Amino acid sequence: MIERIDAIIIGAGHNGLVCGAYLARSGLKVLFLEARDAVGGMTSESTIDDDFHIAGLAHTSFPVCAKIRKDLRLEKFGYSAGKGIETITLQEDGRHLRFGRNTVSGPDLTDKDVDAYRHFKDEFFGYAKAMRPMFATRPPRLKNMDFADKMTLAKLGWNIRFGLGRESMYEFLRVAAINIYDVLEEEFEDERLKGALAADAVIGHHMGPRSPGTVLTWLARLHAELNGPLSVVSGGPSQMCNALLQAVEASGASIRTGARVKKILVDKGKAFGVELEDGEIVKAKTIVSNADPRSTFLELVGAPQLDATFIQRVTQIRGAGDVAKLHLALSGTPEFLGLSASELENRLLIAPTMRYVEHAFNDAKYARYSEQPVLEITLPSLHNDSLAPRGHHVMSVNIQYAPYDIDGGWHEQKTTFAYKIIALIGKYAPNLKSLIVDHEFLTPQDIESRYNVRQGHWHHGEMTIHQSFMMRPVHGAAQYNTPIDGLYLCGAGAHPGGGLTGLPGHNAAQRILESGIAK
Image 1 (cartoon, rainbow, N blue to C red):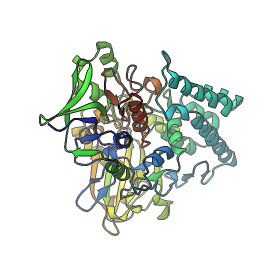
Image 2: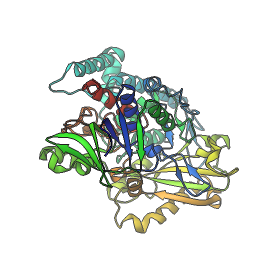
Image 3: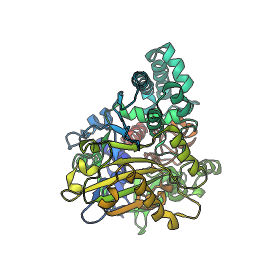
Image 4: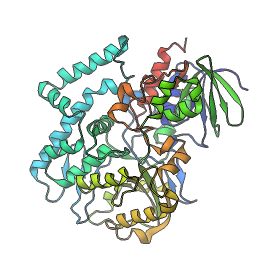
C-alpha cells in the first residue's frame, strides 16, 4: 500500500503522458502505472537484435500541436519535430510521383493535375482548419448541452459558414461524409496521384477508398498536418515521448514501469483505486485510463459494474487491427529504381493506383491478407545513425491490409506473408533481399500482445462516422468521463482519435480539471 494520491494514469503512452503532465502541472499528485518496461507506448524503442534498433511502431508523425508544445514546454526538454519529408509514391516503371505539402511532381504528370492538386489541398486544408474547434476540445453533446458545448458548436458553425465562405461551405457539406474514391475521381485524372491520396485516407483503418467516411479520416490526417510537415520517427533525445517524459518528471509526477493493472476498483459506482497483478492496491481520487476503451470497460472495470446497455455498446466497437509491421535489419543501403540515395530519407509509398488500394482491401473483407498490399516504407537509420552499425540500416514497413484474424490463422501464414512483402519491395529495390541480416514481422495479434492494445488497432478503434466526435468511443463515454464516477479515458480510443497528436490526452486533462479535482 502507498500513500493516497490524486490521479492514477493507467498506461504511459504519449496521450497518457500529455494528460498526466497537465494534471501534475496543476498541482495534483500523479502516478503513472505502465505495464511495459518502458514508457511511450507505440513510440517506444524496440530491438531487432543487439545491433539494430527501431524507434517505435509509429514510424512517421506530424509535429505536436503548438498549444501542447507551449503549455508543457517541450522544446525546453529537447523536443524537435524532425526534418520534414516528402512522400514518394513508387511505380514499377520508375514513374514515381513526389508529394510536398501542396505540390506534386513526376514524369508525365499534366499541368492540369498539378494545379488541381494544389487547389485540392488548399481547399481541404481550409476544411481541416474549420473543424479545429471539434478537435482541440471535448466533443459537444447534442442533447443537454452546457455552455462549453454550445460554444464549441458556435465556433464550428462560424468557421464553416463564414470562414469557408458560401461555395466552400456547400462543397464541404457535400463531401464530408462520403468516400474518398468518388471525390478523387472527380478531381484528378492521374491514377498514381489518386492512389497515393487514397492510401493516406485509409491507412491504419479497416476501410477501402470506397468505404463511407474516408473523407473524414483524410481530414483528420490533414488536421495533424496543419501543425507542420511529416517527419520520420527516428528516436533519440528529440523524440516526442522523451520530451514528454522529462516534462512529466519535471512536474513532479511519478512513473512505475512493469506495473500491470489487473483491475480498476469501484465502490457504489465510483472508482477509488486499482489492483495490480501482484495484488498491490493503489488508491486515488481519480483514475485515468490510457488503455483502449474495450480493455478499460470489459477487462479492467468489468461488466458487473456497468449498465447492460452500455456494455452492449462497448462490445460493438469496431476495432480489429488491419496493419502489420515489418522491420528489416540491412547490411547496406537498398537501391530503389529511379531514386537517388538522398531521396530514401523520404516516406516511400506503394499504392500505384486507387483501384490497387481498393483491391488490396477486398482481401481483408474476407479474412485474408492482401496479396498485393499497400506498403508505407521508411529508413529511420538515415535520420538517426545510432539505430544501426556504421554503413548498415533499418527499414520500417507498414503493411495494409493484414487482418487481426485470418482464415487458417497467423501461425501458419506469418512467415509466408513476410517473404511476400520482401519480394514485393524487391520489385522496386532489387538488391534488398541480399542486404537482409535479420527481420521482425508483427501481425496485429503480435501488436496486441506487445503493446497491450485490444486487437492490435493503431487507433484503439476505427475512426468511422459512428465512432467519431461526440460518438467516440460510444455514447455515454464520449466526453472523456465515463459511467463510473472518477474514471476517465485519455487514449486514442477517445476523441479525436489516433495519431501522435496528443490531443486526446490534452482534452481529457482539461475535462478532468473542469471537474474540480484540483480544488
